[in-house]
Length: 309
Image (cartoon, rainbow, N blue to C red; front, side):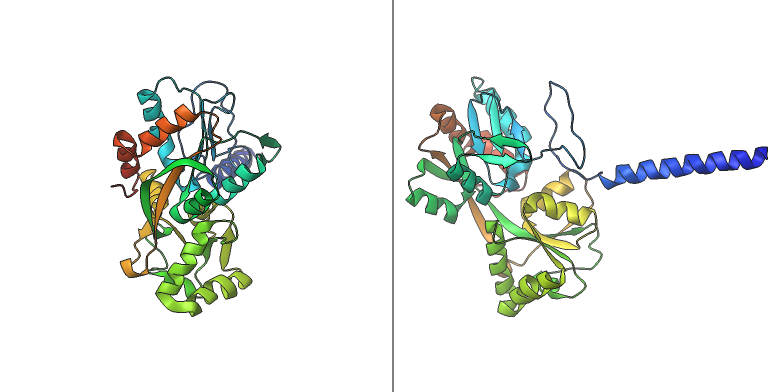
């Protein structure tokens, strides 16, 4: 009996350890992937309260920046370097949501996320060149500048288990794709163009119609978070992303692989930032725009895989 009791106790302890490990593993790749801010009570709860795309000081900020979401990875170094160069600006708030959502937020003058409402007006807004030119025609900006470029790549799990080599492989029935929804994210439309450059309208239709309908193409609302997580958690096999997103996942030692896209099938984008005409903090905005388009700002973008000139 004593021996049986010891065995039972060991089995219960083992089951408890396995259960605890499974709970830990479930969220081991969860964002935020940036370094947490110092000061205050840190109450980040994986899978529930992690708010990965709102950065910094929301109370009485001296600068508010709305960045296209795929630039979240530069913020730790970029904001620290900017504050060093301009020590008068210590309270900075940045959102890195999809630019289509940020544009709607500007128009509606508020954002609701869960139970929170944000009514801060941005000083700086960034998006791809074509969209920014459209907004400029509507009179949004005082000034705007190109500050970085990017290109598409394919992200897969480490060692590329399905040996995906190009967008043509996305058309295979057994390949599960995590794809930005073109209805919400402008990158989605650019990727559809890349599909057509690779395999014509037939490939685009297979990926975006047939596979969406049968569930093997999953459309995201915030691809720079959902696609890496889907691949890391093995609910998707591959996803088209901007190169810097896959590059950063490797930087932080997540088990992903980068599959380069041939030049003739690839799509490039130029990031443009603009100072809004009604920016509440014009001096800070102009300083920030100057910073990211010169010297240290450009060095930081280059470090994280962006193309800078």
